[in-house]
Image (cartoon, rainbow, N blue to C red; front, side, top):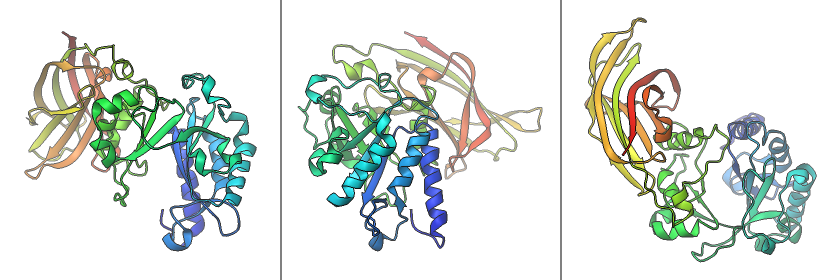
Length: 381
């Protein structure tokens, strides 16, 4: 976050963002820690004198974390420490964590005695610290629950976590990553070139079994973020979703096979004049393949009671190969240049048989009152 003319406004804004993230169910926060000029650790993006970014006292953020971590969800929060602090200020970090979060810190004192990491249900109302133990002073390292280590495919320590950017995970073998992620954590984050805080598509990392796929929450105006919203909306926004069984156990085949029949209509007042086109994509989680269906052109079918227009897009049929874990994404585009005006994403498990409604967002990511009305049928073959 770049400093504006009023540093206090920037400080307050970031504190409010951190609170909003926790209240909205975010369960993993990255803290970029640097030495403060006054001797106290701060959160910022690079050395403050060089990057001119807003600086926030770590103590203030930890207080927000303590107060709002379990406001919306009781499931555990993970704090990822990106440490750039001197040993002296690391001691202060450890002191802050113990003083303000000590009562809810999960600390595995004997990793060897735990063959599996406790489930999120067992870790309710607890906070886990993630960081590289070998690079921290002993007082801070002793508070780390998830040890950040380089990725090794045969590493089965459930308390180890490896991080890689979106480009690196793209090059990794799907089978290798699924197997590795059955016993330990992998965290994916945006590549450094995304200086505009844009987002990448999280779907391909999920398809490889990665548990933590970090997105830029400050940028929610893209179809990429709507995939994350669709996934975690399926579990009441608690911040955790159980991985499909076939990603956790190689002996369990994914045998589910659904066919879908849809009839689409869009009602809004006013609607852009035709031509409107509905584009549909299916994200197959098991195979990691994205399937594009034949676009549907809209026709004005009737006036609504509120003076709006009802546009009919007709039917679309998917004759098989669909599972409840897959995603369906709808995009309504306008004109010859196919300008995106509305979009929505849902997991197949949320698309019930019968008449249902998919809430749409504008191209800026804003929710609107109008919706895509669908008569659908999901049949298991």
